[in-house]
Length: 322
Ligand code: TXA
Ligand code: MG
Image (cartoon, rainbow, N blue to C red; front, side):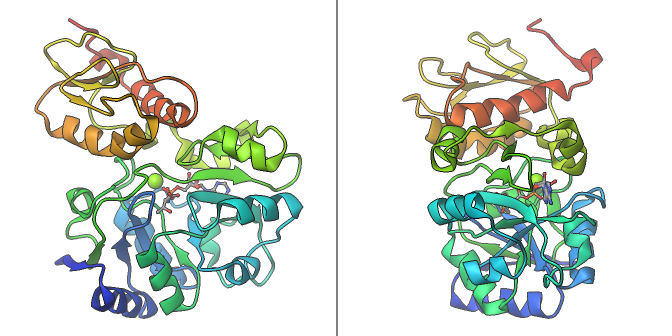
């Protein structure tokens, strides 16, 4: 298959809607990361997404909606879900809510779960695509399973060239970090994934603490699997002085080979994180070292991504500063 690349202008968006309406898949930009999209109501199209990603078939997908009416056809909103959606939509918040019977969504999207992950993206291109299709758009991040989330069209091509017919190029993603995921399915709200919205901002609007995901939910959300966010190289955290074999990602006063944010700005570091890890993978170095990044606000999500990458290593392949 030859992959076409189109700019996210009017013609590109119209072509994207046409491909989706005909049951095809398209990689497209959102404000968080690029998504690999399919019509959420079309099971075969959704299956094509899993196939292109090489993703385990039991991993459910986020359904992207254009407005609240579309969301409420899919899920039940309680007052807490309503508060969070009102505060953060459109934007990088995904809510996992009880699935409404008769929701216009293929069962493959939710992997058979009685819940559904919903998000109303802010990206104008993605909004236009959803409105054009007139239905929810299912989209995981547009990377092959186990690879880094793509924040540019070129990243999508690195892992999916020849596996998707069309990539809509909207330039680099603004956040560069996936959406925060909050589950409100009974028994108190849980933070299933740290993401582009700081946990304390979510808790302020929720008016209560968000509990960590339970073990059962970790099985239900295998996107949390250890190697999910791992780059292909061994990675060490909190490194002030890197070895010669390491591509060093700096932060604040630690310059490194390239800095996530020279001024120590966590939002800037989040936006650069996946770009920097992609650079590191291509650097020719044997390993990655990352400078200390403070563990508060968006720094929690950044450290969470990096810790997963570090823990996913084969210990035998680990080169410890030698
Ligand atoms: O920013 C984002 O969220 C991007 C853009 C494209 O929207 N999407 C994204 O999708 O990161 P994905 O598939 O890479 O991650 C979605 C996560 C997965 O870990 C999945 O297991 C979890 O959401 N998830 C989806 N539906 C769920 C459900 N019903 N219950 C629990 N977890 C769910
Ligand atoms: Mg993903």
